[in-house]
Image 1 (tube, rainbow, N blue to C red):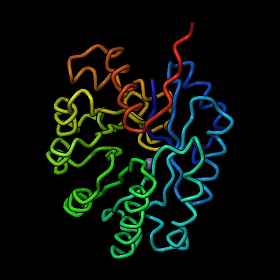
Image 2 (cartoon, helix red, strand yellow):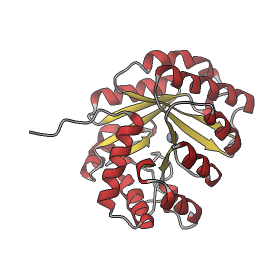
Image 3 (cartoon, rainbow, N blue to C red):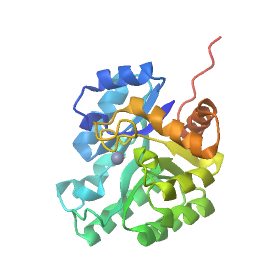
Length: 254
Ligand SMILES: [Zn+2]
């Protein structure tokens, strides 16, 4: 199984311990997401020393008002690393609203342009900015992953444009009927699962620090709403992640 979105450098426990427990649970691959240049470097260092770990590199919309926003150019070199597989997370957050909207828009546009230039997929963070996100993505040519999908208003655009829809622990919450309906309807070749560790632990771990091993609970919940076998959905998600992030597919053992 794969956890397509975790912040290994932002968890309390060491990546080695988190990854050992993930492997024990059958989660052999993790995409760790850097937010800001130092975090991106830390993420690449983890990907370098741990097998099955890849990195997405971006500057978060929360950082749009600070010094990090001026460092997009530094991402270019980092994205040349063989374990760097995506640009992001990037997008707009008008909910927590930690940075002025104009600065968020500029930073988002710069990273979309960068993703196009380096030919990598883009990992999208969206809170309360559905219409603007949809408009910006409609002008973007590359592969799109809607991370921690929680915007039913973006769902039709996702279907129309073939965006990957990545579900996190919130799809397991009691009140998430709308998300589960989206999870039921996503085409088989566009569904992904993630933890967003250390945030948003799924049931039955809700309220505790999240970790990549917990993606098994989210996959199980997705399989239930789709009336599929969890093991089959897990291998479908693996294949989807290979396609979305152009991950190296291991040679079959002889
Ligand atoms: Zn994240």
